[in-house]
Length: 200
Image (cartoon, rainbow, N blue to C red; front, side, top):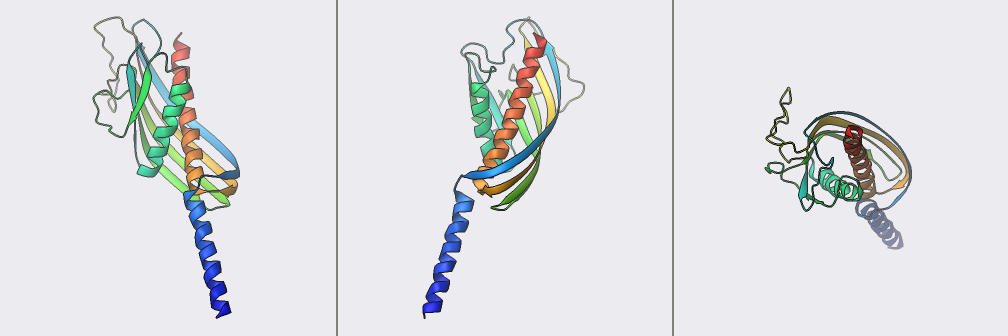
C-alpha cells in the first residue's frame, strides 16, 4: 500500500511539473537566434515620411497557425507602438486579413518548432506586405504599379523574413513561443523603420 501511494505521489508530481512547463511563462535559457530577410520597397509622392498621419490608425493583421499568430500579433503591437513608426497615430491589431484597411499583413508560411523543457529549436518564415495608405490590393501582383491623385507620400513594402533559433536551459513552451514572436516582431519593425529612414 505504501509503494502504491508513493507511485501516485510521484505521478502527480510529474503531471504538475509537465503542467508548469506547458502553461507557465518562464525562461532560464540561452538562445542563439539568426535571421534573414528580403524586403523590397516602393514609394511615391512627397510629404511626411511616416506611416501614421496625425490622428489616424493603422491596422496590422497576422495570418497563420493560431497560437503563434496570436503571440506575434501581441509582439508586433508592442514593437510598433514603441517604434518611430507610430508618430502621433495609433496601431491596432486584427486577425481579419480581409479588411479593406490593413496597413501591415504578416503571413506565417512555416513554423517548424521542436521544444523540450531543456532544449528547443525552431525555423520560422513569414511573408510581409505593408502599405502606408492601407491599400494592399497590389499584394501578390507583379510588377507593383503605384498611382496617386495627389502628392501625398505613399510607401509599399513586400518581403520575406526567416528566423532560426536554438535555445538550451530551462524553458517553458509559452516562453519559447513568446521569445520567437518577439524576435520576429523586432526584426520586422526594424526593417520597416529602415525603409522610411533610407528615403529621407
